[in-house]
Length: 430
Image (cartoon, rainbow, N blue to C red; front, top):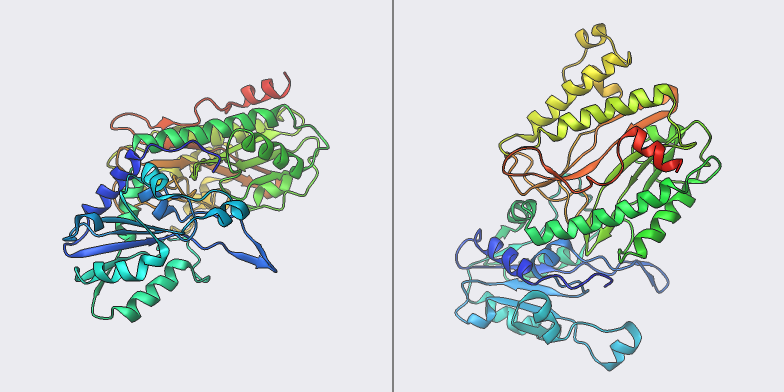
């Protein structure tokens, strides 16, 4: 890992939060992700399953966490099972966690090697009536590929058919939506690295550069600051490509007079940042481009003030829609006739602003969270309105990451990243 060791108090706290919501006479199991094959003997870089990381800090393949808070054997109330390390593994793959290092990372005292799992797990299952199994229940999840967690669930149901089953996902959605101060600091670090990348790009962009060159500049800056790289597939979309919401080809030349939509963010210690800025290729917005830019910025500034405790996200998105409607009227992109004849399920403003304004952010870019419950202090959201005008080859989106406060506007983790049109122009022409 490139990042500094995280204070284990975070993971101790997170386990307490999970256990507090478990039924009695139960245990819960969390598995690492697989290392996914590509072809031949090639694999993708390992990415830890965010749930086991959230609860233990263990960032290593083939790891298993078992929480059994009602166990009569006190040493089995929190147990880690790890891939056994040895000199051969150290030579070929590098250092793996020892039992002592696993404790320093997680705060979990009982650590077994994986070879002991079946024996110890059987003992633990004899003491409980039900088991919490972990499934991916994110609203956007694609669950076609069978995961290590999926295989484990099949095995448990076959081996222990008399045990009742509960879902860990609702608890994880709840506790991961609330950010501990240590998590906020890690997210701030990710945002600070993103800031360095943006500043680098503002001094690099000019007519004739290629989108992939901008991507390379960002990657360079992220890696040299102890990030693993991008928190998600970067969008570097110039001209008409900015109107394609998930454009990731990044293979076009940036032309004089166009605007580049940068939707990029560094990760740090598995925590995501998610930023969008729209910048002029030649360092100067046209009058029309600036009008659209400032309209989006106006909506963003008003929208983020709505991210306060007690607000329902559905109501929030509707109110942002009304804010956007007002700006689109001013820009003459829609008129009152469009509004009168609009489909209530697809309002007129959706022609130019067709996506949501905010999503949870944290260990995942689109993080877990309770979308049907009121916003609470300590939650983290993006705020990212946009206007997309294909007929003008112009797409503008502006996005920051925010932490909801007990009172007042949320705290902006990206508050020091240039955002005003004139500020961007000044930095590009410095």
